[in-house]
Length: 227
Picture (tube, helix red, strand yellow):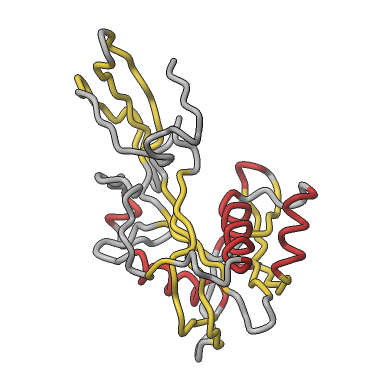
């Protein structure tokens, strides 16, 4: 194991690294994502890893002129809970850019459009078990859309609330909110605000952590439609 003091480390950032893939199979293909099994050469050893092959996703911190964040609450079956989240969704519409997907999701889930878009933060959700990368945008200059979107399934009874950025930070630190995009996005927005928003990146900034070969699933092939 190599240990470096932060003051002397050459660079404090994640860096790409690849190893020879000896075998790659997809033992399970799902509607939204796949399970991939790969055998790779790592040093002198051959090791096998299984992980979720994910399309990636976008999330939006929609902030109004009073520093309030738009939250939505919906049922999430895997965790058996109604969770407070920010608008967002999968990158599963063929040919759609990340920014276009974010604009679409804000309209579909919250009936809002935004005049100003910036990249707030990018992160991997579970790098030891999934290729999923999420890009969180900051959206300001909000206006209601002209037409309300017809929602289905878990989205049919979405609740919407406006919460101040300060109150959202406090809720995270109390342990009341658990969605990873909320926790990462809200804390990043709070710090960016403290720095007068100087940390924001261009809305079309390079997204180096997005999977090079995103999962091809029936949902993606069906144009991103939900089952």
